[in-house]
Image (cartoon, rainbow, N blue to C red; front, side):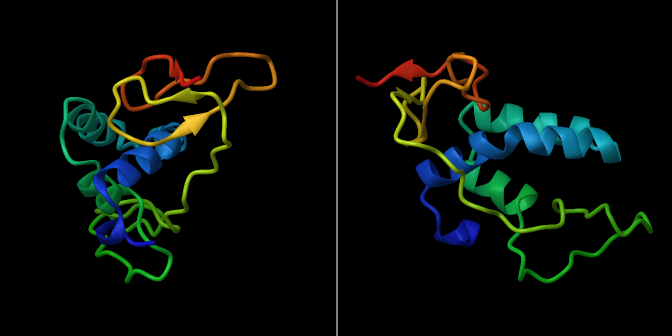
Length: 125
């Protein structure tokens, strides 16, 4: 599903679920500051759809122009497709009521975290 087809709430759920992996990729290729600026914009109420378009490209999207000369670094995002977040019908929801993402506790029993706001997700039931 392309970012243009997502609602803002769906884009925010996708952004929240994929942000930890994006941070790892950004750290590996040296674009952490760029990602942090966009993450702060989303956290402060900016468009999650825009961030998803920028950082989570579709697999069949045309390759972006690359000025660095490195094939692994793309100006507008990371290679690979934007996949919907794998979320269970857990009992925790968005702590800022901006998206429909739900999650359950992990194998160690930790409360899930909203990667957009940095806050623990709130119980839904």
